[in-house]
Amino acid sequence: MLFRHALALLPVAALLTASASQDELEPFELTPQDGYFVAEGTLVPETGAHIDRVRRDHPAIRVLVMEFVPGSDDDNEYLGTAWKLHRDGFTTVVPGDGLVASGGTDFFLAGRHRIIEPGACIGVHSWEDAGPPAYQATDVPRDHEDHEDFLDYFKAIGISPEFYWFTIAAAPADRMHWMSPAEINRFQMSSTPVPDSGETAAQRAARCSSRAEGD
Image 1 (cartoon, one colour):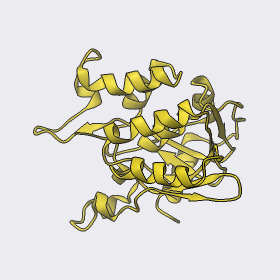
Image 2 (image 1 turned 45 degrees about the vertical axis):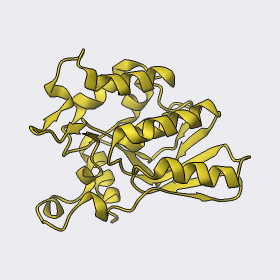
Image 3 (image 1 turned 30 degrees about the vertical axis):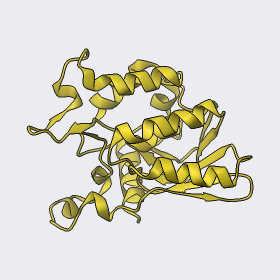
């Protein structure tokens, strides 16, 4: 089972305690607002059914604002749901005070039109298979079958496979790389290029890590 861990966003101290678990992260919730949906929480196996129910009640909405979607607990569960949003022409937005990371970043990319506002935090890292023995994406060759679901997904939504290879090399599964505007623009993640803020990598990491921890 492949994971892009939302746990990578937890403080190191929390990762060292027995009480810190994926179950403690808030599950994904889609809330209708005035003409758009707001998304918050971790993508879980029940997310697809939840989104389908909410969309049935609000069929005209085609905008998804991702306030805080830090990851998933099983990547293979949500890719099909994300594809449906792409098929149906959704616009996806990460607001300036928002955060997507890990599987949440993959989910955001399903938008036909994508908006990343200045200040938004966009996190990527490798996936991990729990095994046993456990291994990460960079531990297997590029032609390994475990890469196929992700490569097929990115191809279907029009994202270069080079983005996938970038993400798995950017940080191990228990860490997070916070993307710079230049990196975001390199992979055309936002339909409107994100301006350079002048922020250093260290400043961005500190700011986004603090946001991830709820500070």
